[in-house]
Image 1 (cartoon, chains in turn orange, yellow):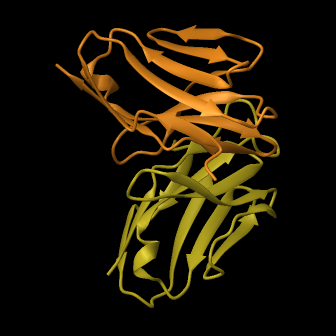
Image 2 (spheres, chains in turn green, brown):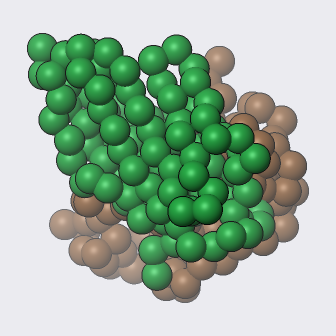
Image 3 (cartoon, chains in turn purple, red):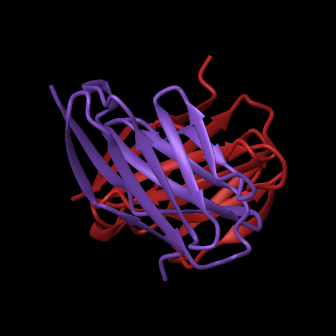
Length: 110
Length: 115
């Protein structure tokens, strides 16, 4: 059973546009929500993370929006650049491990 | 300087063979993991060790056996390799007992191809 549902599976955005990736979860015990960025041939790398007592966190062009009541969170990439082309994973912490979404392949077209 | 290093990066082998993947971290983290990433990029946890003690053992075939000689190393041995074992295997580490704030640090992966 997939603990964290992620959409879309793939996303194509023009340079300068906004990329939005959504995740949803059911387990209310989850207490920490990171996003990972993975480039081809590399391992996932922590990009940005949020705790559920905060509704939004921004780091540069990357913003996490968190809706605790809806059990949803999303990653927004502003002014998307070709260098942002990668696979993005959301995750949620439950107990002593993280549960990952299924990934979104983002392509930013110049 | 690499934080989590895995060897080899690529591994091509025939069905039925036994192979090992090695992982080392120099971050001083207490917990290490093995993840399998399939062709659809789905990340699935296989094992987790905290200070050499197995704490997560997901449902994987017993042909897969992790070994942690010390808290900086977690190796993965696979017996009787099958075609379905072809995937990218990632080692990761984290501070504390796992699930620590700051998340995981992943290695760059080992692409295993079974022919």
